[in-house]
Length: 135
Image (cartoon, rainbow, N blue to C red; front, top):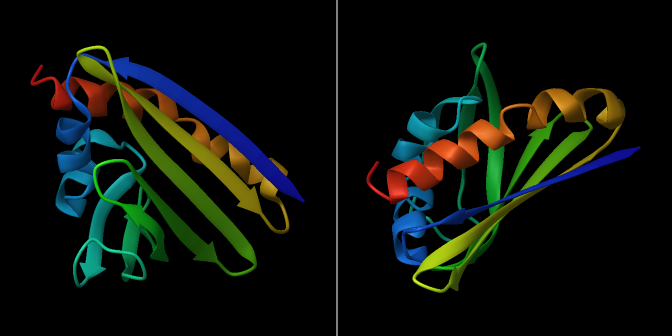
């Protein structure tokens, strides 16, 4: 069973402004309503692991599977047999950027939990781009 969801937004800020927020895990809870806190062991780099406290106080381990500084990162959360992979990409467009977040959930109940996991995705993207733009 799997579930896929994608959200994109344009941003007046350059990709570096978006990346600054993404690579600072301490900022995640300020723009993503699904995240209460994040603890990362080590630097924001491929293979780094940590714990994400989701809304409702659920602690979930995660790993940064892909980190392409300034352009992309993919974090993978594991909840038992359920795996949530969230791919974040930013690319320059004109004077600003296009931000795309793709979520893939695999495992038992993925189709049921998917809409709950991605419900706040539009809000998170709006807050992220607003912060990157300094609004």
